[in-house]
Amino acid sequence: MKNVRAVVLAAGEGTRMKSPLTKLLHRIDYQELVKFPVGACVKSGVSKVIVVVGHQAEKVKSVLGNNFEYVYQKERRGTGDALKQAIPLLKDFGGELIVLPGDAPFVTPSILKELVQYQRKRESAATVLTALLPNPTHYGRIVRDGYRQIKKIVEIKDATSEELKIKEVNSGIYCFNTRELLPVLPLLKCNNASREYYLTDVVELFHQKGLRVEAMRTKDSLVVLGVNTPEELKRAWKILKRKSNK
Image 1: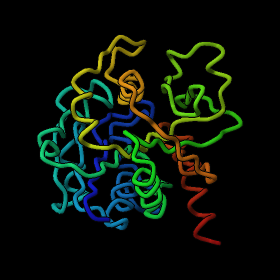
Image 2 (image 1 turned 120 degrees about the vertical axis):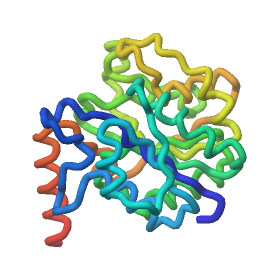
Image 3 (image 1 turned 90 degrees about the vertical axis):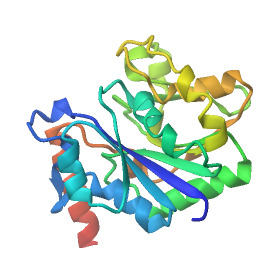
């Protein structure tokens, strides 16, 4: 994909894994978790992959190797703050930017290509990959406006009882118009339940500026599944094993 870059957010500690090892280096099917989204970016043909590292940064870098650009998030203050660390590598870039988490074992090159094509066709400020889940649990909810655009993404800690009824969820995978994104990142605030800078708040800032944010809803709900706990790690291993057997 020409004129497309990707940022993989791989700085978190993953405390819910209850392990001294960062969750990004736990293995699924004999491959470290972080290699799945990074590998999908490479195979999709993006021109450059930037990896935001933080906790156990040197271990993550040693696993991924020297073919990527790395930026360091000193304090883990949320996904929005993590992406801010990549601004120096993006300030002269005007193409599409894919942003995705480091714990996305089911993201594929084809879904990333489709996301970029969707973004280009609609010429929006951003496109969010979403899915419908019967039991959304801890996933951020997609709040639409009257024109079917995304108005905002609400994290579960900040959601109202009505918003928690929404079944459409955020995958954490985005395609941005980089020129629209960069001026908005410094405007992020941490006035939420977690006291973090949420990347999801970019969507509401775009909406307030009158910019369109589209949703590309995938039929494969596996794509949105992340890994935050030992139980989710076991689930991911079983799913990948079943897919490989097929």
